[in-house]
Image (cartoon, rainbow, N blue to C red):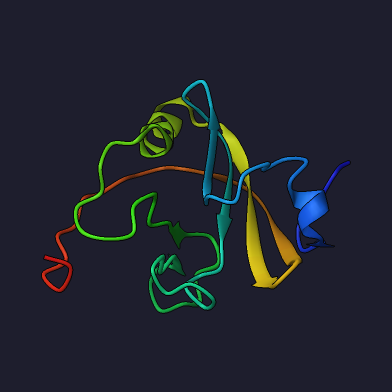
Length: 120
């Protein structure tokens, strides 16, 4: 199956590429694909378009870990390693239960660590 940008897919179609329900899918330390909902359905992961929201070329992706300081899990390590490798991965946006939008292929270009005082 070849997905195209903006295709609307079922979970059965997405899972051919991203077979797990977690947002970051990696194999052997290499990032394979990403899921998001931009915080609409699950506010624990507030991924967003950078800047004023009109910049469709940059997405701030939170990574793995819901509360407090994120750990360097295999998924987060794969995100960091993808900066070095520069490879592109598909990003799927959950619209509603069972409906996903293919947002094209993206590269991880930078990472930063932020302390959220509300999270402690």
